[in-house]
Length: 84
Image 1 (cartoon, rainbow, N blue to C red):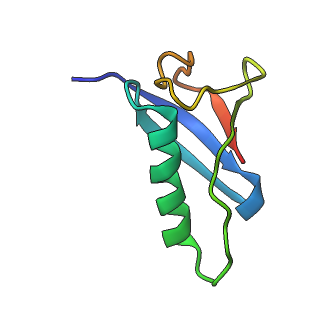
Image 2 (image 1 turned 45 degrees about the vertical axis):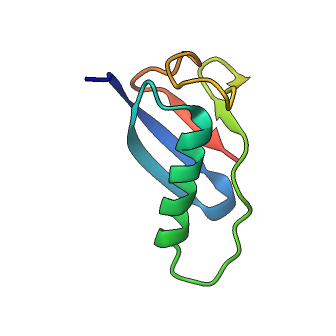
């Protein structure tokens, strides 16, 4: 069974905040696709939301690499990420 990490996710463009458990082997690009679907489904109005493409890791002050896994990007439980 894959290890999971629990992270805080902030999405400033739509004023949303989640605590999300992510499977460590998941690619960042796949995570962004899934997160985008969650955001679209949670929005109650007809706002158009541009697709997410950047994940900023607050603890390391880096942008995560989309083609690598969550684990390869050194994301750990308790970390905070911002999605743009």
